[in-house]
Length: 164
Image (cartoon, rainbow, N blue to C red; front, side):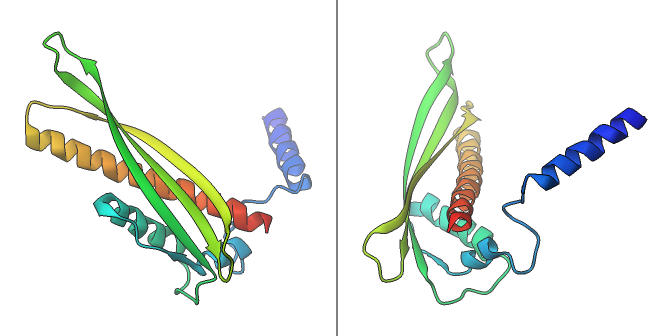
């Protein structure tokens, strides 16, 4: 017991000494989280784009009201489906949905983007004999993909703002 306790204390001491600091610190005046309030998320085409925009707005502006925008986040989405797990009857029973988001962050008054990035996520769903069940599974896969993309984009923005 004493050895485990010593190891835990030593690990905490080393981590504290190296300057490690969480990106999304729970401080009230965290500069990264404060910058999120100044990001205007431009509308994104199609239904899945609307869902991604709503997810980004929810994650970026959770702690503060929308202030005057200093940045504009512009995104485009691409969706693709690949069938796999084919039965002997040549019907697919599983599919992968790949959603790719290309986005750039424009600073106010600048013509060139300050951040250009691409995020990609792949989620799977079952193809069932019922069309309704398959559509429901695909919609659920889209929701999971959007949540994953939203988190990835917010982390990418947080790293960018942290380096500024």
